[in-house]
Image: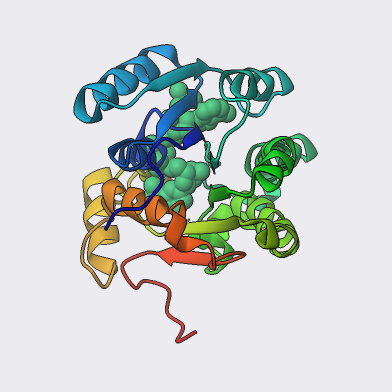
Length: 259
Ligand SMILES: NC(=O)c1ccc[n+]([C@@H]2O[C@H](COP(=O)([O-])OP(=O)(O)OC[C@H]3O[C@@H](n4cnc5c(N)ncnc54)[C@H](OP(=O)(O)O)[C@@H]3O)[C@@H](O)[C@H]2O)c1
């Protein structure tokens, strides 16, 4: 299927590794000009070179922390009129809510709620004026399946999807859609860090926990980042103009509900 987005411009945050990188590759394959943002320059430049070599796409890089005003300004300066915005960044490691301070909560809100909202604020009016926009937020299944140890994520990300639910209904008449992708378990650096944090002294090893997590999924495996990248590219396509405000699980069927 031709996604009919050749020549569009995409700004993707958190796109040097894992799920964000997979979205960048999928869009680049469709002929989209891409600007990718991440903090560490080495992996960012490596990814940009790989994507350009594999797809022939124009790839710009911005080494910046998207949770800061300066980082967001640098991202917008590099891609001032994006047609497509991917909001992605770090989650927070599992823990016990009794240990989280107010600062931990503010930090989580900054990363998982307020930064993506600010990126939308900076881009959505231009998209509406140009009558095309596709915004995808990489969120987490944790907004539908509360994972006790991921309270910071359950809380902060729910704030984001709550905000998007309202905004998405205001932008759609201008052909600007906003959707949230809710990944289950995917094989990525962040997933490895997450599992490492679950290893307890004297308890199960990393390898045991890793195998158990895969086996517990109905698909008996982790998701592949390229599967999420392809989903994202479709949501960013011309064809997806009637899909908005949705919280879309991509989890191998692990969410246990019928609806
Ligand atoms: N993988 C899963 O199974 C899974 C499941 C549910 C939810 N999620 C969520 O999905 C998101 C992506 O996960 P992933 O597995 O792809 O993670 P990952 O492999 O660790 O990749 C994260 C990407 O975001 C960049 N990044 C992180 N913080 C940033 C910041 N403040 N500013 C700019 N760039 C930043 C990282 O580069 P730098 O470190 O160089 O900045 C990297 O490119 C996370 O929020 C994660 O919690 C993942």
